[in-house]
Image (cartoon, rainbow, N blue to C red; front, side, top):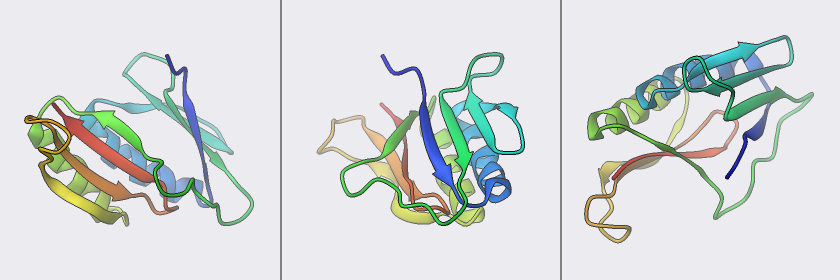
Length: 123
């Protein structure tokens, strides 16, 4: 359905450190990097998320937009959230059940250092 998604980031080195840490629990790794961008996807695969360095602070999409990553377990959701906070992300919803989305919907929400809203979910 979606080939990939790109986010603008102000500080590529900071973004790479953040995304290396938070995407590992959901099974994604950095699959390429150069001086201006980095890509993340499944090991040995193509990128599903690309980070592109911008010359100044970025303005992320507004309310209602976020990027959700499927997590294999609830523990992976917990590790995603903890890694995000340890790497300078901001909490947007601690790990837990979200029964208003479904009886087994376990998720956590964070903002990355540039303000992009992210979710890890295990259903």
